[in-house]
Amino acid sequence: MQVQDESKPYDTINVTPMLDLAYVLLVVFILMTTASVQGLSINMPKPSNKPSTEKHPLKVVQVLPEGTL
Image (cartoon, rainbow, N blue to C red; front, side, top):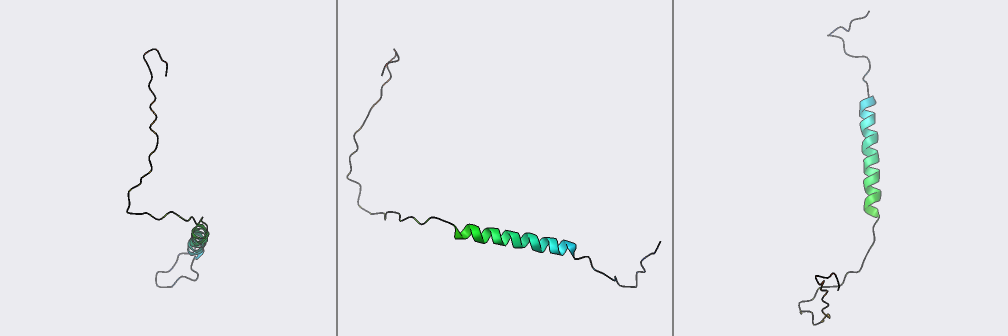
């Protein structure tokens, strides 16, 4: 069995975790970019300062004790 000498530097560096992180970040950026591009543009009505003068008819529903309307 070989033992690593403390004074000798490592021969190789494991880059697998760094590549995994890079791939995950790449996927996240691609998904976020495509999500921000999609959408639906809607022309909303502009608000006004004048009060509404529309009058809606009032409808009342009453349930009697017998269960009739």
